[in-house]
Image (cartoon, rainbow, N blue to C red; front, side):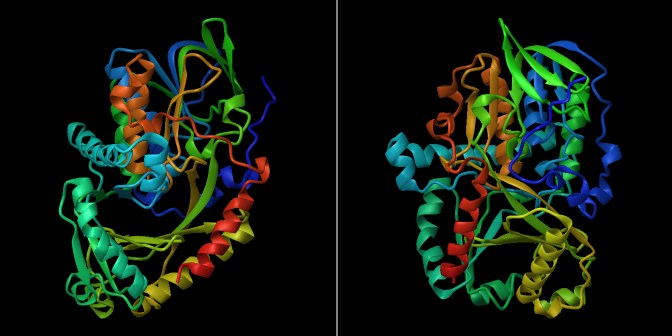
Length: 450
């Protein structure tokens, strides 16, 4: 039995079940529906997937369907991390790099290549849910970006044509009056831009469906089995767990914002987890929706840097989330819950009396390159990883999990991935104190995001 423990930049509390005790998604899909038995002891496998979220489940499913012997391990249970607690947005996104940055680093076609991958990631999830018959409570045709100021509305309207060209679809500019007509009204928005790509879903129902599909394809799944270290052992890889060593020909790391700093030397400082918090209301009545002027089931988010994101579920609950937490403790979570609720009340003043019994939080994952990474783990031949979805991992995490499986089958990365996804991200400065970078960004956003 090993005594080694994962080293991370947030307190131990962050990685317990406490932040998801009141997660709304767990009502329909509790932990018991996702739990898997621990690894019983040392094992020899062909392919080992570390992490049971969307990325890991997609990787495992893809490898098993290709005839590989696959074992998946998770430190808690499949979908314990961001995959079981996100906002339910299967949408465009994944990178924070500007078009100019992409062109300078990867060439003139880089922005278009990235956007094609984003559109493909949505199509990937759509296909998976249909092929495997996964009922995800699908709703919302695309999503709406809401302008929080007149100046922001001008920028959104000006971007409609280029967005339409980039994604090969028709973006609709919505005036303030249009928002009221379409049931997206609120006192803090001046209009919006509707994008028809994407849909909303129930995160845990999607994860549970992927888990069922992976098991049916022959994947062996173990929970309560953290990977503590990956090392090269001749032509194979050795993964240390509390109950024994797993030896594998291929190892696929799919831990994203929950990656331990000491899992392997290369991972140290490559990720910057950032907290996202959400609440969910009780079901709203039709009268309450009409009183607020908000009844659309569209996914929506504000164009602020410290954005709010929200959508009404099919049964009329408002799921409302935001970024911005830096500390993690029971006291901090209580403060964040009050902060999110206060912002909810400002956005929807007619619902100030509506109870929000559900609150939860989790980690999204940023990279210093401002783009996702999918590729080999330098220094560990036979190991691959995918991470860094910048808060948009439902679609992109799923897509890159499948692409990572293709890399593990020795397919040519240039044939399946944009150049911006193939470049390993550099380490963040400040080492274990790099959360201070978020503090600076959040302060700047609060000062200038007006």
